[in-house]
Amino acid sequence: MNAASLLKTAPAEPPHCPPPAIGGLAPFSSVDWPGQLAAVVFVAGCPWRCHYCHNPHLQTRARTLDWDDVFAFLRRRVGLLDAVVFSGGEPLSEPQLPQLMRDVRALGYKIGLHTGGIYPARLADVLPLMDWVGLDIKTSAPRYDALTGRRGSAAPVDACLDLLLQNGGAFECRTTWHPDWLPEPQLLALAQNLSQRGVKHYALQAYRSAPGTPAITLPSEGTQRALAACFSSFCCR
Image (tube, rainbow, N blue to C red; front, side):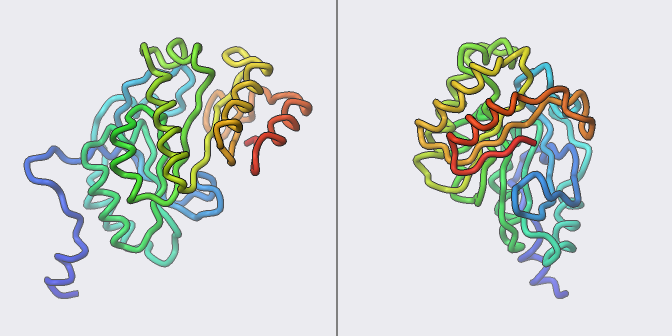
């Protein structure tokens, strides 16, 4: 490979910016973007403190991987993976995320994003760069602040959902569920509201005490059937 081609493929980094806060890398996943084989890049940093968070080590902004190393790995996997998903933490907390997405798209990958819906303006900035979004709808609006530990946390999520609906691109809403913080009647009401707003794809993620462990509990079969009736696609995972 000559110097000119290296310059074309090397990831660009804005001047005078601290390195991106990359907190982890999953080399292969078949579940983080439904229907796609993806690598998952975890961005460290999140202003919320959800009590059930499975990645609390990613709540604080800290860099454990160099982006150049991650990019080199992704370049080697071209043709073997379909996509790259940026997750977290909250990936939109990373100021350099738009450039990271451009770097990855230049390799030919599809781009996905997992977000809690904290930063509507930043989501709007990167929407043209993405092919799919997984938006967390954590609970009903009145319960949001108690769950996230931050005041006014429901409003930006609502704004992010509006952006996704207006944009018309592919996205999924999903809720990590436990009956202690969202009883089944409120869960169904939440889902019906999402459906009425135009959400087509919804996933219920059963709460687990740790990744890979069995689900603590699942909604009743009747509730699952009612949820499925609200959407074009529904899954409980």
